[in-house]
Image (cartoon, rainbow, N blue to C red; front, side, top):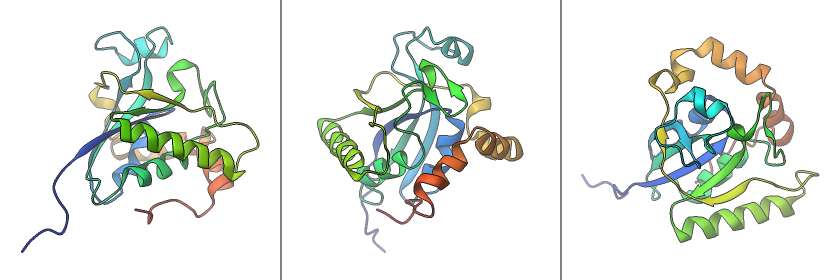
Length: 187
């Protein structure tokens, strides 16, 4: 029996505020091999959560996704990313404030950069948001996995995760701006 899809994998890296809330939406998709919570964008090697939270390392909380683009495309990942964040907030995400919670797309290739730029332009033109889209598109830098207790937080602590997602305002924001358009079926 032959597999209709190749087994090639690529990386995508997104900062969407608290990384706890960014794992599950991607992990649920076909073709996703892994979603790792971590830190990127700064220059400090091997930062800790406490160091990143000081907003002095230059790092943001992010997720790095290993995916099969023949099963779930980079464009579909971008579409799903936009549906998880407030792309108009330059000061963080929801209750999480500060530099370490800014949104960004970190591109690994020129092709990813072009697709991210186009995706951002399309979202801006859509009129879905009244304010400008401020999410940055930046070259990927070294990605440092977060501490083990942050990995798969939604599975390890499902009750606290759901309280946090709802209490932070993320869940209401997503419902308000996207409703049932959750992006799960787009490939």
